[in-house]
Amino acid sequence: MAMIASSPYRPAAARPLWSRLAAVCALALALVAASGLAPARAQNVLRIAAIVNDEVISAQDLDQRLDLAVAATGQRDTPELRRRLRDQVLRSLIDERLQMQEANRMKVAVAPEELNEAYRQLERQNNIPEGRFEEFVTRQGGNIQALNQQLRAELAWGKVIRRRVVPGIIITDEEVELAVQQLKRDAGGVENLLAEILLLVDNPDQEDEVRRDAVRIIEQLRAGATFPAMARQFSNGSTAAAGGDLGWVRPGTLPEEVEQVVEKLTPGQLSEPIRSTTGFHIILVRERRRIRISNPADATVAMKQITFPVPANASRAEADATLSVARAVYDSVSGCSDLERAARELQLKSTTDIPRQKVGELPPRLRTFAADLDVGKLSPPVPAENGLHMYMVCERQEASEEPDRERMRQRLANARVEQGARRLLRDLRRDAVIEFR
Image 1 (cartoon, rainbow, N blue to C red):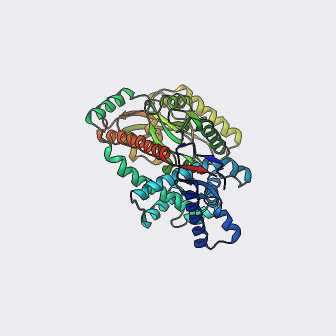
Image 2: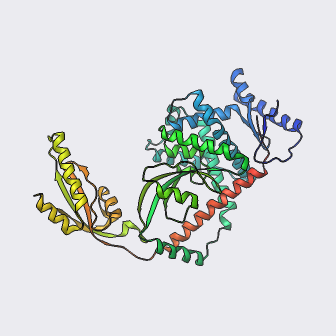
Image 3: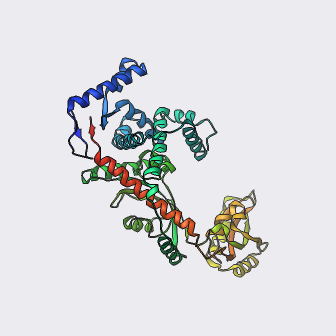
């Protein structure tokens, strides 16, 4: 069985070829015997896609993981799609084997109840009835055995990180104070709700190949694949298990190359591949808002609502005319007294006062406006049962002007853990003997 390519991860000498082949063949035959597969399927088990430190990734392993990847794209399963995804999926499988090998070396185990809870979390994230996720995966064309292996690896790797990386993380009071002062300087600026897919480049020889992978992922996303599903399958970042969710990110947090691109993106827009010293980033800007020191939900606001009636039997022309008037008001008013004046001039039934209360206690439909609108700025028209509604914050009182230092300490620690996890995986790749077949 000729070796097609040696690993780009490490050009180190391996054990004698006959020794490695003996181990590989023994393992493959054991798999066939244990599975009771028919001869045709058995040959697929015997075919080798890669060897990771003498551990086989079979063609069947790769095919099963490709089932999951194809399901994640939401596209029709075709040979061409599988061909485009194959290299990305194989690299993900190699990383997963390295992570599991390290977990086994440290005697890290994943209990059945932990795996069950991971499934329950996936059900909650995807609005699937409890206990129905396996059925959902199968219906989408995914392979439940491959998903089990992926989830088990994620859970085991998380434990490895908590044992090997977290104990060494120390955030000093001085670091927290510097971060607090920076937050105060940033107050009033903008922060972005981001999601990320990170493809690491550990070796210059991988540059072009990983860039092509990033381009293919973007093509799948623009063709309809969901970002969380693609992040779970392909991202090398620590947020992969959370669908790539980075949360609210302030300026100065991301690599400079990424920051420059994010500044130019609008909410809902997807970036092209962004090269940093770490690898290639694919960024989705989900939302954008102004930075506040305190929790926006704890602020107290006084608001007004103006309604532009649209009868249920209104014609399209009448509805469009009302929308045009609402947009004209949006462009012309500034402040709650100005809004009252506009309502009188348009002979509307004045405006409705929304009682002063905390943003977090408002009805869900109002919270976003209450948290994100500047004082005196009118919201765009919002369709409602009786017409079009527009909202304005007349007054805002922040709960506190002092940042939460413990929350800041945790944020700094999380960033440090992320860096440590990346270094650990990089070291495992560097020290591994990996062969592709």
